[in-house]
Image (cartoon, rainbow, N blue to C red; front, side):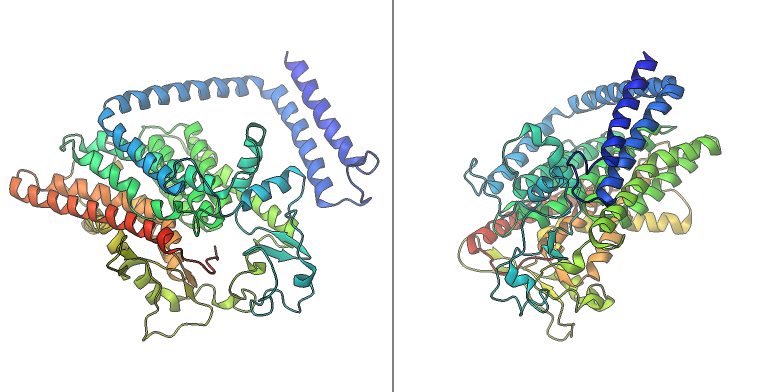
Length: 566
């Protein structure tokens, strides 16, 4: 049986290698030279043969790993179902949030979904044709311009917004993972999948990960708290901006939102599996491999996620080293399981960029046909000078009020006393303190961790897991990921409501845990607990109401005009 399998691998690999060598003769390639495509086919064939040889010598190891994978999936599924059965009363809240998402994504019609863009579907179609560039051809008028990247020069020329133009071809500068996912499911779907569908799927995925993480942490650390706190927290997780905001098509629900939310889905999914892994005395290598794979997909969707994911990866490595009694060799195996998918993803992205733009670091953003000449202002894209303005945008900027429904509207405004480069711009934004006042509860766990670190002691008031403060590790990981993602936005030359998605999942989870910790810390003080609960309920409801009104206002007012960048 093993010999037959190896022969199969050799035949398939040999056929692919033969196709690479004789591509011109059999009509696969009209170019007699060895381009990047033929080289990729050759490498793919060699890898298949290598897999066959590896299987021949290590079949027992492969089969054992496969059995362990099935066992691990079965055990984790059983544990998850057992856990969820104990929290059946949260399911109505979960279903209600998903129904709200559907209502917003369909503009209140439930069935009529109109996607403003289909960028990822176009890229997926190009991938299926073996091309890295888009099939859409640039208008000759655009190509004849002395500087097509100058918005003023192409003012009267038709062009697709935020496409990257390079060597007479259109590309996308966003990560290719969502398009690759569409290629994978393309045999089971009909037509082009609009980016709105991806946005909806990723929002539901993020909420599902937050839902499972909240229940996991609650069951382990806070199950003695009143039951009403958990459904309220889940409702707030699902309906606090920007989730309903980004689902409104025209001007949202586009490729920009799909890239941001796709990265956050994979980030939070990877973090959920990381928590499952490090909560055990010895993390399973397969679970760590899944964590690394999900984080690799996050980076492949949005490259800037490499910074918070790098921090989270270090946190996982630190946790394993401190809490697991394993040999240095086994520790190295755990790190390889976690880090190998991320390294392979970075290598793939480097090749992807090199094949398109001749540089491993060029994503195509420099060549984007944006509302700003990105090539002229390439030194102004990231700068500390934007920090003050962006702090105001993302934290303190209030919405505009009116006497007509929906009463609240986001706005874009620059600080009058603050001078900024001409490249800086902002879409309508509302600050975190207004759309998510509940996030103030994130201060408590952050301060608690800081004090405990300074004093190098443990707080006896907070119930902890026996495995070296797992809750502290979770909060530290989320706070670090939030801080790094938030800092990158503070120094970025463009501000928009959708960018809240880059850090909202992490900070809102920390705020939920902080609220639970605060309630627990109050101990046997019923009056203080009651006041604290009322404040939490008011903050949660206020954030939900404001977020929904702002989301409705975007569709109601119809914010048109340039809303690109990132």
